[in-house]
Image 1: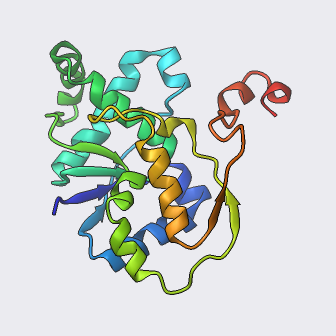
Image 2: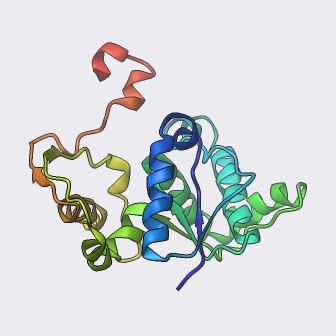
Length: 204
């Protein structure tokens, strides 16, 4: 079993601590070995940081990845969709030797080096692989009809290249909890956050 390091990011500890509590309880029930990563920075925010400066994005993300490696995590689990997009796409970009070398020049000033050994994974993927065990552990089924906002950041293909994988895993996890999943036409639409920064009325 790989050693998991959980990257909580900024939003979850300060705005959605219930997600952190729930994730810990589920991991412990499943017997998954994990540690909460420490001393990290913002992921950074995936939409606007790249528009301002790609090098800053790569460097901040690489620092977080390097910290995970230093804390001996083999897989970085990311429960926040925005953090997942930023770190996953940075992970892919840093496979280019030129980009990684450029970033490591900066990180070296602070005693860090990104080696490309840690794998970035959405918490949806981690839990999706444990679907059978989760089904066995359900004690109080959640009997409700729910509509899911899947988060467009989840539609980033992994090595398997399947953009629907995390979508399907999310749906299956909700179903195994006991809920009925309702379909609606706009379920893949953006939540409106990027547009809200420039035109709140349009985003709403």
